[in-house]
Image 1: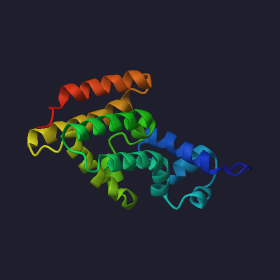
Image 2 (image 1 turned 120 degrees about the horizontal axis):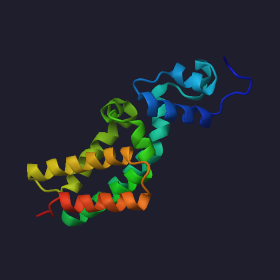
Image 3 (image 1 turned 90 degrees about the vertical axis):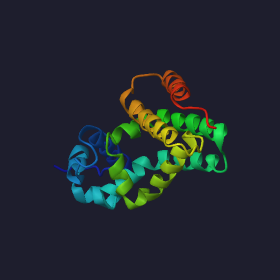
Length: 181
């Protein structure tokens, strides 16, 4: 049942975030979001072209920070690349752990969206930086595992204080990754 006061853009975004957190991106329909806000699906579509646009707006701040990190990594190699990548990604993951939690296992689906195609390329550069641009497969595998683990951990430990989570993650990165050649 639609309510008398029209939904705001922010109310729809909040409802989408809650629904994505409960049933996942793929498991949430625009009708589910509309129902949570108490408006029609048409009202949701007035504010957002489609569900992908909702996800895009929810993830835009995190992606902007990821792009800034990518720019800071340009030209860095070895230990400098590894340190900037580790600290930058841990900070991003801690800051945006709510957004990361929304994607619970659906990161691959996010990358399928045209608006997020560039994120795959940034992710590959970030893995290379975590590995200190080492050509050794074992180092690159470790970098990918650490990167994915950071994202998973931030999504799971929403109750830890930011500084405590950051310290734990950076300590893990230092222990898990070999210093670059």
